[in-house]
Image (tube, rainbow, N blue to C red; front, side, top):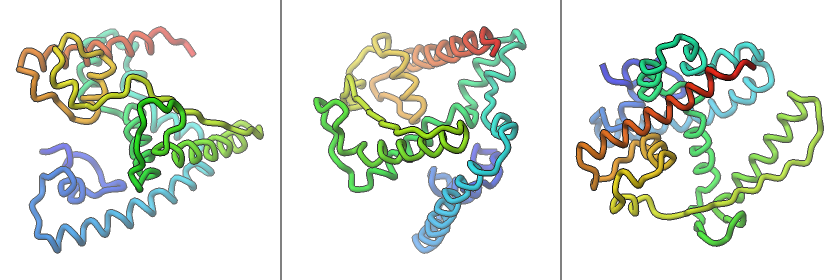
Length: 218
C-alpha cells in the first residue's frame, strides 16, 4: 500500500494525491477534472482554517500538533523513535512545508530573489504582510492583546540547490540535509555511501530534537 493509499481523505482524496505525486496515470481530461476539484477543495479548506482558528478548542489543537517525538520521548527507546519520526512526519513537523506553500501562494507573480537585499525581498513582500495581519489577529483573539506586528525576513547564505551537487556529503550541513529530505531532493552526485551518511545525519538531527523534547518539563 502506498503512502497515498494509507492516508484518509482530507484536503486531498487518495486519488488526487496519487495524481499529484505521479502514481496515477490518467487521460488529460481526467487529470484536468481532478485538478479542478483540487482547486475547489483547497479554496474551501483555506476558509475552514478561519473556522478552526475561531472555534476549535485549545485541547483539540494540542492533540493535532502533538508530535510522535513529544508523545514518546519519555519511552526510553530514543533510537526507535528517532527512526520512526525521521520517516513519518507528523502534523507539527510538516508545518514548515505548509508555510512554504503559503509563501508560494503569496508569490504567484514569481518575483525575483535578490541575494544582497536583506529583508527587502519582493518575493516575500506579500507573505510578510500576510504574516503580520495573521499574527495581529492571533494576538487579539488568543492573547487578548492588540499589537502592531512587523515581520522582517532576511536571507543569508543564499545559493542555488544545484550547488550542493558538487559538495562532498560530509561538508553538507545538517540543516541543508534536513531541507533536502523535506523537499524529497537528493543530489545526483551522492553515491550510496554518501546518501546513507546524509540519512544518518538526518536521524541524528531527530535524536537531538528528541533529547530536547525529553528534557523539557513544561
